[in-house]
Amino acid sequence: MAISTELQAQILRYHHVEKWRANTIAHQLGVHHHTVQCVLARSGLVPHGPRNRPSQIDAYLPFILETLEAFPTLTAARLHAMVCERGYRGDGGHFRHMIARHRPRPKAEAYLRLRTLPGEQAQADWGHFGQILIGRARRPLMAFVIVLSQSRRIFLRFFLDARMEAFLSGHVEAFERWGGVPKVVLYDNLKSAVLERHGDAIRFNPTLLAFAAHYRYDPRPVAVARGNEKGRVERAIRYIRDNFFAARSFKDLDDLNAQADIWCDGVAVDRMCPGLDITVRQAFELEHPYLLPLPDNPFAWPALTAASIAKTPYARFDLNDYSVPHAYVRRSLSIVATQKEVRILDGTKVVACHVRSYDKGAQVEDAAHIKALADEKRAARRHSATDRLAAAVPASTALLERAAQNGHSLQSAVIGLHRLLQHYGASELQAGIMEVLALEGPSPHPNAVQLILERRRERRHQPPLLHIALPQHVQDKDTPVRTARLDLYDQLKEVPDDK
Image (cartoon, rainbow, N blue to C red):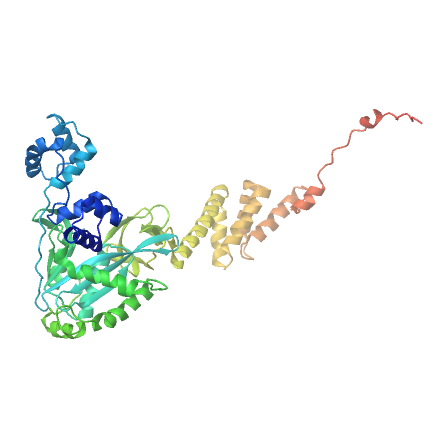
């Protein structure tokens, strides 16, 4: 439990001025006596009062101190077991409190105030600002913060993730806003900068190295557990939380970033620059000439992400599905995603481009992709019916070709021939079509075929075919009604009159 500075001051005053014992101080201040003893021990003082009685642990103190000097992080439980093996019979709880007094404490480390030259260094880091709900997805609200170490100029940009494309996009926007690049950028040991580290052996993220080489700055990670080396960006994130983000309302991410730009160019640059008697705006004007110039060409980013298209024409990316032309099903494509759009490529050819969605389970579709697939399905069904008709009645192929040449609708012609096939049979329809094709008068059509088939039926003196399709409710009226059993009435007997 942390002991407040005010409480420590009261304990020390009662000890030095009033000469109170530890128990008296604890009783008067309403705290545990171990708290008072801890404060006095930290100050190198011995509590007033009678000398402590001899304890069982006194005989083992040389062994305990020697062991703690060799192994400072050894737990009190393990040390208690070692002492018990040597004859100690005291309680483990009391032993733990006694060990806390004798355990060596690390020496307080003093830090030098770091000073940098103009344009020499910037510090970058991520800040987590809770979550934001977009549709059915709950996205983390991440703030990319980079600050110039000399002038303390802050650049702030909010993203919905901390991926590499967002990380590099934040750098690019910051450099363009400043009109230059610092010579060194310090990073924490985050995955976007450092993939692996063992002591001083560091394996940088190759994408960040390529990006730094393009902008000609030196990426440097801070030492492990040395947050003071990038204290400027840490204080900048705390300043953003208190001065900008606290109690702020916004409609969406674009609105929040627009407000962040106004704040960075207004309140943040008009504050006093620490260590200088000028504002951040004035300090940045002095530092700007020392920044490296921006490169002429942009960095080749973002990178490609592989995507496998299944039997449905959609590519899955970041919890959502994006439509592609149906010709690319069962294919492997590539996705290039920025913060605003998602492009799907086949090699170097862009096959689809969509506005990026941060929802979850959404289907982002291009109407042209869906229409093309629907048209092909309808054409496939029409061709399938034509193939079945050609297999049953070979002469139908020639009839349909001549009908198409004369401008007739093939779909209605196929439907009409299927209806004739159902009523007259394949052999009779084949003969009727051959007879129509032999005529030189009117253009061939299923209506002409039906007329020929009717004439052939009359020559055979067969009854006409009735094609009546009654509605279902009319057909239900003609359903036979089951006759009721009348013998049940014969079984009824008159009930005698009791009167």
